[in-house]
Length: 267
Image (spheres, rainbow, N blue to C red):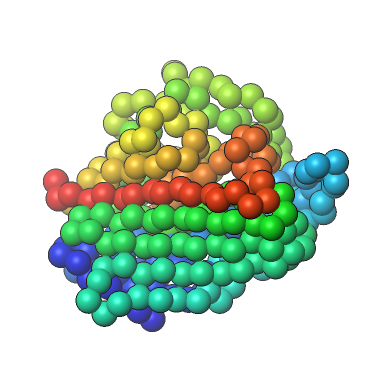
């Protein structure tokens, strides 16, 4: 375990899944289980996708549905990453090379994840390059606890979401949130369970207000999955499930770059 501290924020990291195992604000735990997800976050229907006329079959590992979930049976969250950090800097980097056909995906994919702790935020930067055309959709599955989950107030800067079918796969529609249970256009309690993807309209993706803290989420990704459990919630920035966004295709030799930042302030 590696611990990094900067101002009010401190975090523990592990080489398993390049993960944030614990995030604290002013010595109070506010997040856990922050593993990196890949190669493809969310679901792929039937574990199949076609790229350049070739169909690829992935392992089916979604517990209740015939899908590939979060990259397959041994995704990035279960891999051992190489770690580097300095003792006097609030930065830690993880690297991993996903070999060609690993979990069924094409291309040797070199991935780097860089975490930076500022005095009030956790920034996650992703970069990757493949020697073959492939698909790539990374995220961090960090679980936040800012107080009672269903009382936590949330605003998501999205006008639409992606409805799913009985197998949790997007129907292909981008549905308006206005007037529905998915309407978080203004701050309101989470109130119930969600496992849905929202289409973002700006860099400020969300604001969450808990008992003691306010959290803002900034990202350059086009979507964000809201996932809840009884004691925590996730705001996973990503491309939508099932290759709905063509930007998830990473061409051979091209560099994928993305960043997401979680910023915290006392109420």
